[in-house]
Image 1 (cartoon, rainbow, N blue to C red):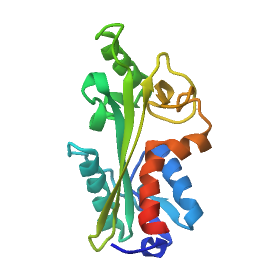
Image 2 (image 1 turned 120 degrees about the vertical axis):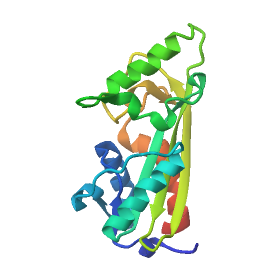
Image 3 (image 1 turned 120 degrees about the horizontal axis):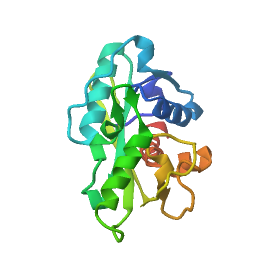
Image 4 (image 1 turned 135 degrees about the horizontal axis):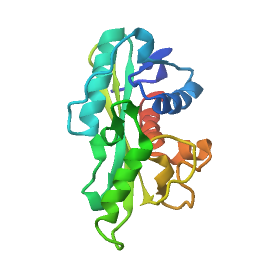
Length: 205
């Protein structure tokens, strides 16, 4: 599909209620003259993520937002995939943080560490963050863009920047966790930035 940024239009709905993701994606599209509007501004609920893949969940959310707003919609589904845990938590990354009173990311990081510790002191701590962006237009057109960043997990958590599992993830070639890293540096190398670079190459050139 040919196209440029005008095909997206001046407004793009971000099909997420995650404030951290909203901030990151808004910062990524702003230089291209696109105003990122959170789906919550339209009073739409967050659809249940029923798919078993990042792509499936991303498309589900973007389709829902595009249909409900009549605007192009961009959604993100991403997660932490730990080699020694068979790729878990993966698509269930956020579920590991769920509590009756909301998401507790320290709890989620603790669950990962507990499972790794149970596998012994020599367990591989290799992991990667994966991201799939889904861009859906109201007329039904769809595109997917994927990005990954490899690294390893540390314990205890380090840094108060970022969100989610960022404080325990050190990307390859760096000494800081995403939670310690300058946001501009993280935005240049993150899984989400890499997925967005593909979107930019395809549509915003």
